[in-house]
Length: 117
Image (cartoon, rainbow, N blue to C red; front, side, top):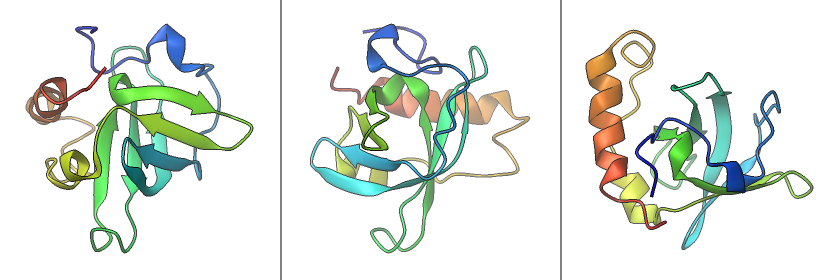
């Protein structure tokens, strides 16, 4: 397991610069939503996933290190987390996520302890 939760693993099939907006996101136990926004900045790569009606429209921030694989043909992203792990994650805060290192540390710590890869 890698220490950098905020970076894509080389085995995911992700190519830097690929627009993942609109891709479906699959947890280990089913679909969780679609990518609303993403970043592939070095050391701060993430997905913002709109979970839709599944957990009442909650948006979640998934560090790139949680991604197992990207299927560009199917436009799907597979993450190494269960639906419950994502549902119980810290709520996405659009104001804190861009300038608050403590927020990224909190989110990263939550996922670092839950990855199944």
